[in-house]
Image (cartoon, rainbow, N blue to C red):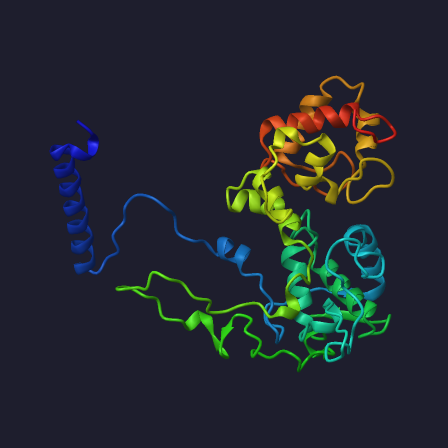
Length: 347
C-alpha cells in the first residue's frame, strides 16, 4: 500500500494539523505570538548588513570621503581590467562618454550619459563592485571611485573631493531625462507592481504587461554569457544549458566535451585570469603553473581554493568560490592549469 493510500497516516497528519492550528489560535487569543521552535530574532547587525542602499537624496550615505586622484589609483588596480583605463570598457558596461547624446540620432548610453543621480553611481559601486568581490571596497574607496568616474565623464574637475554632504548636490547631465513612458517597469505609465493578483477564475493564457524599451535591448551585450555563474546557481541550470542559451539556442554541448580553455571561459574564470600574458584581476594561469607545478600538494590546494575561494596567495584581491562548477570540472581545470605549456596552448 502506498503512503498516499494509508488512511491511518492521513488521519495522523490531519490530527497534527488540528493540534498545531489550535495551539496557534490559543496563542493569538491570549495576545502572544505562537512559537514553533525554529528561526531566530533578527538582530540589529543582521539588518545593518542589508540596509546599505543609498537613495537619490543621499539618505544612506556613510561617513567618509574620497578624491578624484585617489580614485584613479583604485580604478587602475580594481576596475580598469573590465571597464578600460578611461571607462571605454574592455568587455563590460561603458562608464564614460556620450554625455548629451541621448536625444541625438546616435545616443551613447553610458554611466555618465544616462544616470540622473550621482548617488546612484555610489550605491551601485558600494553594493556590487568589483565584480569578483562585491562589497569589499571601503567607504572611502567608493567615494573616490565615484569621483573618478564622474571625472572621466567631465562632470567634475580633477580636484574634487566627495563626501556625504557634497555628493547629493551634484547635478548629472541627464538629471531630468528619466521618464516612465517607455514601458520599462510600467504598463501604460502605471507601475506594474500595482497590478492586481488573480486569485480565482484566472485566465489560462498570459499576456505581456510590461517590457524593456527597444533602446535598451542588448545594450549590455550578451547577458547570458555575462551571468553564467550566477545563472548556474540561481536557476539550477547546467553549464551546457547556459552555454546553449548564450549561443542563442540549439542543442546543448555536454560539458565533458568542452576543451579546458572553453570550460574556463564558460565557468567565468577568464573574466579575472588570462591563460598567459599580463595579469587581469588575478594571476595568469601560466604564472600559477610556474609557481606551483613542482610543489607537493599544489593540486589539492588549488582544488580547495576553487571550492572555497580566499585571498592572500597573490595579494589582497579575494578570489570568489567557483563551487557552482561540478567537482569533476574543477579537477579538469586544475589539471589543465598545472600542465599548460608556457605558450598557452591547450595540452
